[in-house]
Image (cartoon, rainbow over all chains, first blue to last red; front, side):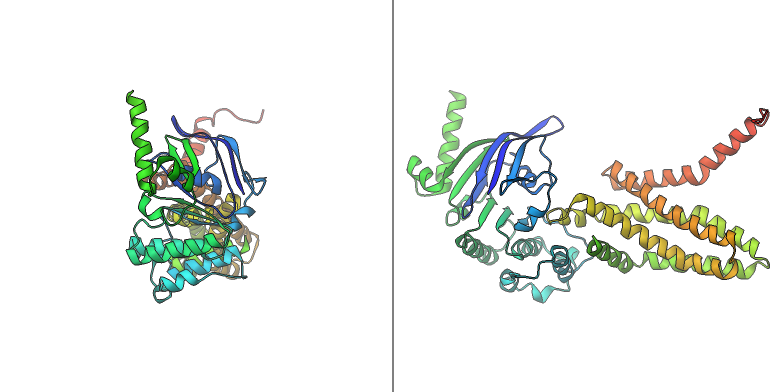
Length: 240
Length: 183
């Protein structure tokens, strides 16, 4: 569904993406993990067309995303740090996005109800706490029933109850056959969600494996342990 | 694009600064026509307003507005809209609201008190100058990410076009007065 071919991106001298090639299919739930500043968010933003890669190609359903924008109708994006116009209320933001998308058919307000955001519809964005802003981002990402969901650190800043609601929602969407891309540092949270894992380090893809294969290979039952083991092994290789 | 312009226009009107600007322009124009006994003196006062106040308000308000809508732009980028459309709608929304404010504030008294070629010219020139300075505001806000710097650049541009440029032309005019252009 999404195909990334030899993608490179530099910010000044800093090489953020080095020859990244990946492909994502429908029905997968993929975790992008890696240390801070390794290029996860840049990768996501280049899929969305917010960052233009220096070289390489990104295809969405077989068509290049360069110069196109219609494909974004099929993507729901939840940014890591949602920034919203200060003096708009939650209700106004939701209405505005609805107007822009002009998408009347099947609007998915389930998350809005379970987060009880409707009660706070006339609160201004600037008065919201970080967690509530995250909730608004999540609601906006799921609102239009998109085929692809891109969630950048979805559970960071959410209280346990809200993050549980969000996780359940993600699982339900996954079962509908949608492609879900998640970046997260909370490996323990990913266990129930994901089917594939991509590890990025310094702008390069270290590996892209199915979770089941990974667990079998390393002989552990938790993703977090598997990753820790791999990282240790890598360090050994560096020292040796 | 229409929807976007609509949203931006609503946001600007809600801001109320444009309303205040309209009222001040109206007060200045009405009083200058009412105080002077001939309409040509009133026209002169309004000409000064158009030459100094209108560009200053247009460029400053627009620059600050663009900086403040950084979040709005970021939000839109994740949606199915092109960057092109976002910028064009921002430009259209800002210039439309500023031109409307000018037309309501200064245009109506001009039409009533000086319904001739001069009055009409001033309305057209005032609208054009508004649009041009909104455009310059885009330039200054894109040149730098730093808000204070951007507003500084905007003020410098206004200073240059409103005062320095005229001074420069006058200076050259007097300096080169000894060299007649016609032979």
